[in-house]
Image (cartoon, rainbow, N blue to C red; front, side, top):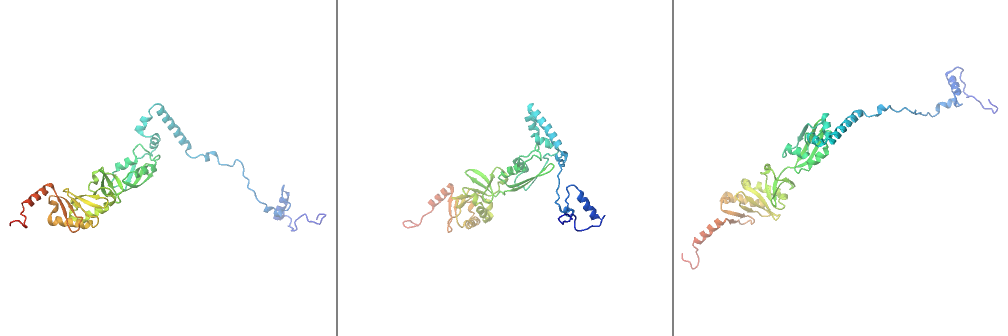
Length: 326
């Protein structure tokens, strides 16, 4: 004890030579150690970060960086030489852009193109629209640009484009289905079922599609196709449907005859035309037009020759009545 009656050592006694006693003595002799060795094990530990413990520089450099830089250097030298020598344009015409040519050299060329979903378009049309040729490489090809160019084609509703390394491009198309041919102001258009214009009529492949003429006829093409179905045996003799004032149809027959249909009950009028042909062979007569807009009568307009012949026949026919001898 000191002069104030305080103990200088812990109250707990340890047997001399015991492990606890030796550890306590060693702790008390360590420079800067706490005098109260029992509590020293609860001191907060500190992690010491040594300077110079970072990764070696060779581990921090990306792999193949040297190879890429070397190839880039020699590529830049080659392009500069071609440009200064005035041969760059000739090289591009023969081999494509330098970066595409370099990628093809390493086996990343555009060697195979798979196209699916086409029925109306030809493969050559798809390639031309996409801007693809053998001078391109797969690695530098912009697939979004290819897709956008394809979707600008009126026949294409949607397109998907993806790369399959090392050298294959896969294109999937959804086409708009041609439904009818629409004539407006002398121009012919291929249209879809909803009336959307797909393209100009420039191909004989669409010659057998239903043919509609006039303002708003493209939007009513389904109605016209329904009339064709109602015509039954006369369907093949109807060449076109002409929209009148956006409200009703006139049918143009294969012999040039015009058949006027009503705005309402057009299908019933077509059925009357079928009956007239079956019973009276009206399409074989010298008739320019048949008007079926009135449900209780049929009005016909004869050709000029037929009209003259009818007039002569009426003149020769005796007229019975008052003041005429019989």
